[in-house]
Length: 80
Image (cartoon, one colour):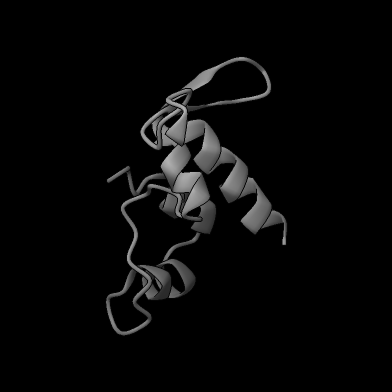
């Protein structure tokens, strides 16, 4: 329910021209991301260069089976 309301309210703000889906995310500490956009959050995507393919050679398979530091592997993927 929360996602629906949040998307509706933000959609109104987009329609009003106050924000766009391409606006960069502003964090609570006041810094602004140079890569993560509002659209990534609303579409529940990270913006990372990542494919959810679980077959041989897929990003999750590599992360889970061949990388000693999974979080670092994901962070090093870069952005789309």
